Image (tube, rainbow, N blue to C red):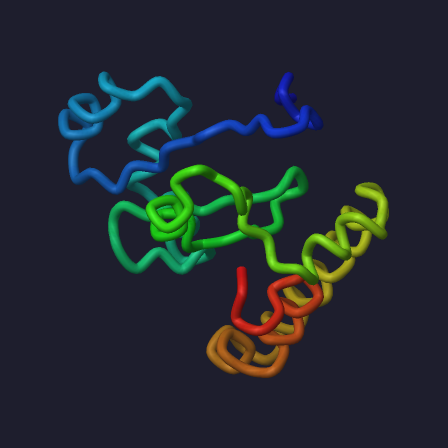
Length: 151
């Protein structure tokens, strides 16, 4: 999948453009050295889904994910200027560090897949509005290691 996966202190950047046209996308992309979601997907349903999933409120937004797709932080754009030396990178919460240290990756993947299935079933039964901002949302964040408002 990703040749760098599992290598310490290495990561991949994937740009998801919210440009309004393919021409705008091309103008930005020619100056970048990283991967990008194809413009048709980024401007379509997949881009909309990712924006909602990661709570994108402004552009640019930088979201950091761990090796299994859990959110490390949705605020990397603001953390970089505050930590230019990268001393705190990747800016994980203390609870997240503890969980990733104590639980093997395979167990974290298993738990994540099981919880995703449960929460999807609950969303389908109760409705997105009820679950989105309520107790279950906070519970899921706590299990993912986002404790005390830290991401």
